[in-house]
Length: 117
Image (cartoon, rainbow, N blue to C red):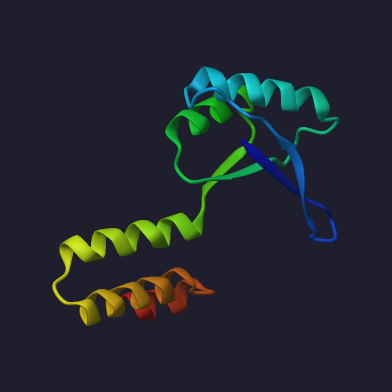
């Protein structure tokens, strides 16, 4: 498990790394509890995951005030994979993925609504 942190100057750094023997919730819970021992401040935590459900559950149970987000890169990767099996033709697949990415990158609700319709 690789945990990154971000400074107030928006500079990312490795906060901790844990080599786990498995991907069960208990493994992630142990690592999160070890990480908590290093932290003097546990408010405003945000975790970005690849939808590893056991990790998400461990975060919920061990750091209940933390927010969890899904990694946009993994979302795009999954959309592209499903487009290949659901949409005929490479051009149509690419067009769909570009439209999806454009929709997700909308800056305002109004922009989103325009692109969606």
